[in-house]
Length: 241
Ligand code: URA
Image (tube, rainbow, N blue to C red; front, side, top):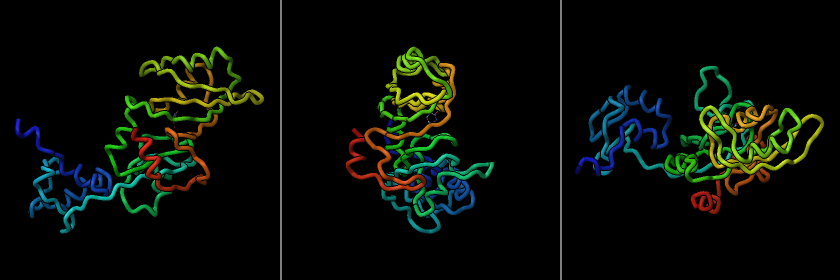
């Protein structure tokens, strides 16, 4: 019983959460003997650390708690949202070279999707924003490959059946029809993998262009594409509510 109440984390998690690198980096450093616990090298990444009692050091220096950082990036298409790509494609980290803390994306945007992406070293915050129970709305501009009827839009609003279950009710506004395409604004409160693309496919069309323009109340504003800025205190407070 006593054991359960202790704030325990694996050594790998402690190192990666300290903002030094990814979990894979952390495992590598631990295996390489760079990490000490209470003055002794520990090479097992799954070693339990008592956050209140154990002293962890990296390269001989005690781990310091990193300051929390919250970044808003306007991701262009052509960049993937993972740290390392086996195919060596550009990643969002290439756009964040001047950020010297290891941050993780809050959810993902596909290679072909542009728009707002939050990145942070506050993993609790990230988990909360990604958790569909918190209903943080995310708004997308969509160019669909066909002229969509009102019935099709109504299907999107009510929810469509996807392989991983029905989608929640969504806010869907027709912005304009141009030639053989329909431009929509869609707001979702869940963030499943390729959700907008799959929803549009479920009603018989394809996504030609997809941009995430808002997360909660945060909009792109005048942030240039490919650039980032820090979230303001007010924006953070609103997101947390
Ligand atoms: N929905 C998608 O289909 N792709 C994204 O990148 C984001 C939402």
